[in-house]
Length: 469
Image (cartoon, rainbow, N blue to C red):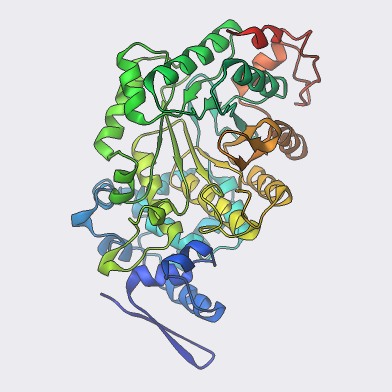
C-alpha cells in the first residue's frame, strides 16, 4: 500500500493509502465524520487535496479503492475501462485533469469532453471533483452534452426537464390524478410521471401503471410513466403484460450495498433487456430509471475499501454511476438530501454534494438529474433548495423532481414544487423537453418565450383528468 505525505506550515501529514487520501481530501460532510474517515482539520484536508493533486491518473487503474476480487462493481469498472479513450489524459495527474477539464470547458469543447468520458473511471472523476470549487463543477458540467430519449428527449442544451412526482400515502387514484393535473398545468412531467408506491405489491403497482398509462393515452401526452417498485416486481409485471415504460431501481457503488437493495449487475442487465423488449419508446429506447444517494453504502454497512479502510461517501456515490453507465439509462438522479443529516448535515453540505453528483455523473456520460431535497430534521430550508436549483440549472442539469407544494406527503421530505421549475426555466431561459413543449403549445399552454400560460383547470383540455377512475 502506497503511503502519501504532505508538509504544510511545518506540519507533516501522512495518509494511509489511496482510500484514506481520497477521504481526507473530501469537503466536510457529516457522513464521513460518522464513518470515521473525514479529515480532522481544514489543514489536514488541504494537505490531502495537495497530495491528491499529484497522484497520476494511472494509479486508479493499479490501486482499486474497493478490491477487484471481492466486488463486482470494481470488476465492472476495470473490465469495461476504455483505454483508447484514456490515452488523451493518461499522462496527467488528478490536478492536471482538473486543468484539462477547465480548459476544455472554457473553449466549449464538448467533443473532447465526450471523447474522454469512457476513459475515466469513477474514482478519477471523484478525485478531481474534490479539487474543484463549486464554480468549477458548474462550468465543466455546463460544457458537457449528454442526452437520452424514450418518448421525450432529456439533456438537450437549453432545456430543464422535470419528474412529476404525484405520490399519495394510500395510492388513492383521485389524489394522484389531482397531483398529476396540478403538475401538467404548470408544465411539469416531461422527464417522467413517476410514483413512489405506498406498497410494493404487484397488484397495487399494476393498478398505478394502468392509471398512468390511461392518463397518458387519453391526453396524448408525450412523456413516460414509472412506478418506482423493486426491479423484480417490475420484471414480473412486464411478463404479465402490464404497461411498463421505465424500469426503476435504486443502485449503489459497492456489491454489498447493491445486495442490500436486492440487486446485482446481471439482474439489472436482464431488467434493461426486458424493458427494451416492449419497444414502447417513440424517439429512443433508453428504459432504465436509476436513483442514487450519498451515504447509501454507509447506511448499509457496505462502505469499506482496500485494507478495511472506510471509503468516503462521495467516492462510493460516483462508483454507482459506473453501474448506471453500463445500463444506458434514460434518467439517473441523486436524491441528494433524502437520506438525512447523518450523511449531509446542512444546506451547505447538500448544495456541495448536489453539484458534485451532477458533475461526476455527467462527466461519466449520464443524463444526470437531482432531487433537490432535504429531510425536516436537517439544517436546511427552501432557500437552500432555491440556491441549489439555480446552480444546477446553470450547470445544465437534465432534470429535477417536483412535487405538489414542495412537500411529499407520502415520503415525508421536502423537495421542489412545480412552480420552482417554472422559476428556473424563466430566470435561466430554459425550456421543457422539445416533444413535451410541442404538446404544451398545441394546448395553448406555452408562450413563444417559453413561459407557461395560466389555464383554468375547469376549462383546460385536461379537466377530465380529475374524473379518472
